[in-house]
Amino acid sequence: MHIDGAASRITNNVGIISATLTTIQATIPAGLGQTLDAKFTIPRNKTGYMTAFAASIYKGAVGSLADLTIKQTKFAQSGSAGSVTEHYTSLATDGSSHIHHPFRPYKVFEQEVDIWMRVEAVYSASPEITGAFDLILVDN
Image (cartoon, rainbow, N blue to C red; front, side, top):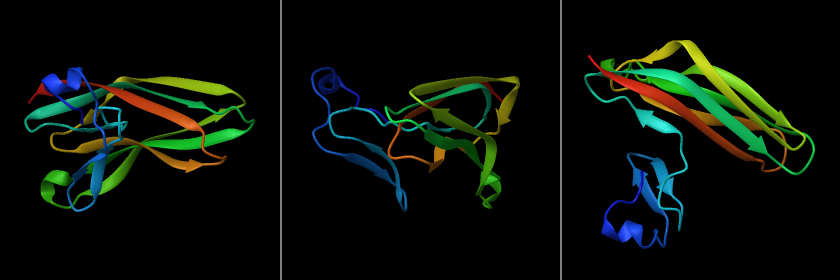
C-alpha cells in the first residue's frame, strides 16, 4: 500500500493506516507513506514468475541471526487456502549481511495467490531486516 494523490507529494500520513480483512493485513507506519511489507497477490488471469529475492540484516552487536521464508497461499482458488513455504534462508552477521538469490528456472505462482516474505525467527535483540522479491506477470 502507498499513499497516492496530490497531497502525497507534499506530506506523508500523520497516523498509522491499516488494511483489515478479518485481521490486520498491512499497515503504513506514521510518516512513511507506504507499507514496509514484502507482499503481493497475483492478479486474476495472470501467472507470476519470481525471478529473484534479496534480503539483508544489520545489527551493530555481534551475533545477529534471522530465519526468513517466502510463503504463498497455495490452493486459494479452491477455497482450501493454507500457507506453504516456498523458500527458506537464514541471515547472520557480525555487522551486516546481504543475500541476493536468483531463481533459475523462475519460481511459478498461479493467479489469485498471495505471496509474502516473512521473518520466522530472530536470534538476537531487534536486528534491522529488509526483504524484497522480483516478479514478472504474464497474461494467462
